[in-house]
Amino acid sequence: MEKGQADNITRKGGKKSKITKILIVIFLIAFLFIGIIIGIYNFRNYKLYKYITSSSEEEIDIYYNFKYMLIWNKTIEYIKENKKEVNFIGKNYTISIPSYNFSKYYDFNIDIYDEISTNEKFKNLRVCIVDFTDFQDRYGVGNIKLKLSDNMRENKILDVYKFENDETILYKKALDVKDGYINFNIEDDTCNKYIIVNVPLEDIIIENEVLEIKNNTSLDLITKTYPDNATVSNFNFKSNSEALSISSDGIINAKEAGEYVIEISEDITNIKKEITIRVIPVALEIRPDKQNVEIGIGKNTKINVSVYPEDAINKELVFESLDENIVTVDNEGNLHGNNIGECDIIIKTKEKPIVETNIKIKVVEIPQIVDNNAGLTYINGVLIANKKYSLPATYNPGIDKTALSAYYEMKNDAVSSGFSLEIMSGFRSYDTQRGLYNRYVNTYGKAEADTFSAEPGKSEHQTGLAFDLGWVDDDYAYTAEGKWLEKNCYKYGFIIRYPKGKEHITGYKYEPWHVRYLGNPLATDVYNSGLCLEEYLGI
Image (tube, rainbow, N blue to C red):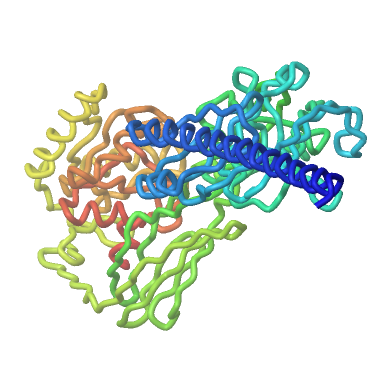
């Protein structure tokens, strides 16, 4: 072999040896680098695993300094089995991952920046943009807590909008800014870009400055903002009266009729508006004095009805019999029994809102028993003395002891209520009545005297069952004592014998002082019927 050839072989062998050495060094460096990476990976994951498994908290806070994170499978399994929520805490934001969405690899690539918006909705307003476009495994994120810039944290509340296909859609309304951070949930949301903004409120708008509602009803007060996308936390509602309440969500409840003022204000701006609410009283309930009525064929009775509330604007009532063959009724509540049977009477308001009730009527045969023994006329057991039926001149029973005992009971209760209720006139004999009647005829003439004084033999005072109480004066009806007597005498077995509005039937003018003893339950039945005695007995 020539020397030149040997040198060539030596040089070639030397080159290969150097390349091999270089490759070995590169391999060792790569192996060392990979080992370091694996070491760091395992070290970090070991610390992470130990930290998570040693914590008894349901939420785990992990502070990280790397953009990427690769997590042990057994860490993931532990988190899911124990239903932990993990918060990855970086410099400008915190990302919360619920256990069921936790995954192996995270690329924390979120772009956050402020800008002056050119969007029509937020024109010239400073907004914060949060862009998740490059964030890997975006769907695992449950919540994000952002650290706001100084410009944005000046606001107490902020709205969060989705930004999709160049359109903004309100996503979270009026979120609180606390310690310079804002929190909002984005779990299972496909949107990758959000706009955070505060649109200043300029005015509160109410469509009607005066509203009318009915008592005991509710109304949803509709308020609007200007601009319509203004950032508002809550409206505060305040009524000037307990008779008209309003809930925190603007539901008005009208309890009593009247005129009230509602104040609407907003927490942040202190903008206030007032609205006048007029509550109109309408009928809410019809209250008849009885639910079941029994009357005789050819007999009359009356249903007394009250409307609640008393100042309702639609108090006029309509009465309707569902079978006029059995009973008829007029719009004053007067019933007349026509034939044996049962039917309902409907009572309802004439004007809207319509409120109605019904009562059951039973018509029965009640024979009128007339007893003319010894010149006295008893109808269904009641001694009658009126313009049609008279008493004999010899009838002189004196005051009835049972009636007098009932009077004393009534008087004692009247005294307890502050009234004296003295007897002005009790029993009168035939001769006494004759002298009194003749004096009235001589003074006023017979026609007028007959309107307030009975002919001898036709006076109820001769029965011993009638009393004139208090004092004989038309104004007695308007006194407290007269009103008490009218409302309570039936409880003791008495009736106002000559009631107002029945003059054409009794033949006598209204005498609020004149009571007649019937005993109970008859006195109560006559009182509740609203009829005079002649009507009640059908005479």
